[in-house]
Length: 125
Image 1 (cartoon, helix red, strand yellow):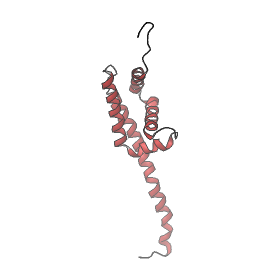
Image 2 (image 1 turned 120 degrees about the horizontal axis):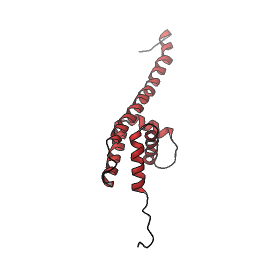
Image 3 (image 1 turned 90 degrees about the vertical axis):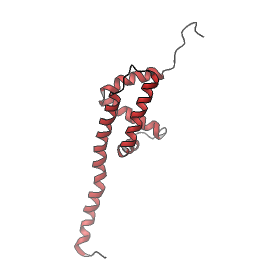
Image 4 (image 1 turned 180 degrees about the horizontal axis):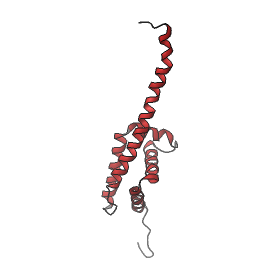
Protein backbone atom coordinates (compact mmCIF):
# COMPACT_ATOMS: atom_id res chain seq x y z
CA UNK A 1 0.00 0.00 0.00
CA UNK A 2 1.41 3.35 -0.97
CA UNK A 3 0.71 6.56 0.90
CA UNK A 4 0.43 9.85 -0.89
CA UNK A 5 -0.85 13.23 -0.18
CA UNK A 6 -1.70 14.64 3.21
CA UNK A 7 -1.17 11.38 5.17
CA UNK A 8 2.64 11.86 4.97
CA UNK A 9 2.30 15.06 7.00
CA UNK A 10 1.64 12.97 10.11
CA UNK A 11 4.92 11.05 9.94
CA UNK A 12 6.98 13.65 11.89
CA UNK A 13 4.27 13.96 14.54
CA UNK A 14 3.96 10.20 14.98
CA UNK A 15 7.75 9.85 15.04
CA UNK A 16 8.06 12.46 17.80
CA UNK A 17 5.35 10.77 19.83
CA UNK A 18 7.02 7.37 19.52
CA UNK A 19 10.48 8.73 20.35
CA UNK A 20 9.15 10.71 23.33
CA UNK A 21 7.46 7.75 25.04
CA UNK A 22 10.57 5.89 26.26
CA UNK A 23 11.87 9.06 27.91
CA UNK A 24 8.73 9.41 30.03
CA UNK A 25 8.83 5.69 30.82
CA UNK A 26 12.48 5.93 31.80
CA UNK A 27 11.80 8.89 34.10
CA UNK A 28 9.01 6.97 35.80
CA UNK A 29 11.23 3.90 36.03
CA UNK A 30 14.01 6.02 37.60
CA UNK A 31 11.63 7.12 40.37
CA UNK A 32 10.53 3.51 40.90
CA UNK A 33 14.15 2.36 40.92
CA UNK A 34 14.98 4.85 43.65
CA UNK A 35 11.89 4.00 45.66
CA UNK A 36 12.42 0.23 45.41
CA UNK A 37 16.13 0.43 46.14
CA UNK A 38 15.71 2.74 49.13
CA UNK A 39 12.98 0.49 50.49
CA UNK A 40 15.16 -2.59 50.12
CA UNK A 41 18.16 -0.90 51.76
CA UNK A 42 15.92 0.35 54.58
CA UNK A 43 15.09 -3.25 55.47
CA UNK A 44 18.76 -4.12 56.08
CA UNK A 45 19.87 -4.15 59.73
CA UNK A 46 23.32 -2.51 59.87
CA UNK A 47 24.02 -4.39 63.12
CA UNK A 48 23.92 -7.73 61.29
CA UNK A 49 27.04 -9.76 60.62
CA UNK A 50 29.31 -8.48 57.83
CA UNK A 51 28.39 -11.34 55.49
CA UNK A 52 24.65 -10.73 56.00
CA UNK A 53 24.95 -6.99 55.33
CA UNK A 54 27.14 -7.56 52.28
CA UNK A 55 24.80 -10.22 50.85
CA UNK A 56 21.71 -8.08 51.55
CA UNK A 57 23.15 -5.03 49.81
CA UNK A 58 24.19 -7.14 46.82
CA UNK A 59 20.69 -8.60 46.66
CA UNK A 60 19.13 -5.11 46.69
CA UNK A 61 21.43 -3.91 43.89
CA UNK A 62 20.94 -7.02 41.75
CA UNK A 63 17.17 -6.84 42.15
CA UNK A 64 17.16 -3.16 41.19
CA UNK A 65 19.17 -3.84 38.04
CA UNK A 66 16.92 -6.71 37.00
CA UNK A 67 13.64 -4.93 37.71
CA UNK A 68 14.55 -1.50 36.29
CA UNK A 69 16.73 -2.03 33.20
CA UNK A 70 15.73 1.23 31.46
CA UNK A 71 16.62 3.35 34.49
CA UNK A 72 19.90 1.51 35.00
CA UNK A 73 20.80 1.98 31.33
CA UNK A 74 20.00 5.68 31.67
CA UNK A 75 22.26 5.92 34.73
CA UNK A 76 25.02 4.07 32.93
CA UNK A 77 24.95 6.46 29.99
CA UNK A 78 24.66 9.58 32.18
CA UNK A 79 27.65 8.82 34.38
CA UNK A 80 31.38 8.96 33.76
CA UNK A 81 32.81 6.42 31.36
CA UNK A 82 35.56 5.10 33.63
CA UNK A 83 35.66 1.59 35.06
CA UNK A 84 33.56 -1.44 34.32
CA UNK A 85 29.82 -1.08 33.73
CA UNK A 86 29.13 -2.84 37.05
CA UNK A 87 31.38 -0.43 38.94
CA UNK A 88 29.82 2.58 37.21
CA UNK A 89 26.28 1.39 37.98
CA UNK A 90 27.24 0.85 41.63
CA UNK A 91 28.70 4.34 41.83
CA UNK A 92 25.65 5.93 40.24
CA UNK A 93 23.17 4.00 42.41
CA UNK A 94 25.20 4.84 45.51
CA UNK A 95 25.18 8.51 44.58
CA UNK A 96 21.44 8.43 43.97
CA UNK A 97 20.80 6.81 47.34
CA UNK A 98 23.23 9.08 49.19
CA UNK A 99 21.28 12.15 48.17
CA UNK A 100 17.76 11.00 49.00
CA UNK A 101 17.74 7.83 51.13
CA UNK A 102 18.38 8.34 54.84
CA UNK A 103 18.63 4.60 55.54
CA UNK A 104 21.43 4.26 53.00
CA UNK A 105 23.53 6.95 54.66
CA UNK A 106 23.73 4.91 57.86
CA UNK A 107 24.33 1.72 55.93
CA UNK A 108 27.08 3.36 53.87
CA UNK A 109 29.05 4.06 57.06
CA UNK A 110 28.70 0.39 57.99
CA UNK A 111 29.82 -0.73 54.53
CA UNK A 112 32.83 1.58 54.61
CA UNK A 113 33.85 0.17 58.00
CA UNK A 114 33.48 -3.38 56.70
CA UNK A 115 35.67 -2.82 53.67
CA UNK A 116 38.28 -0.62 55.30
CA UNK A 117 41.53 -2.56 55.71
CA UNK A 118 42.24 -3.49 59.30
CA UNK A 119 44.95 -1.39 60.86
CA UNK A 120 47.55 -3.38 62.75
CA UNK A 121 48.06 -2.17 66.28
CA UNK A 122 51.54 -1.64 67.64
CA UNK A 123 53.02 -4.98 68.69
CA UNK A 124 50.52 -7.05 66.69
CA UNK A 125 51.83 -9.67 64.34
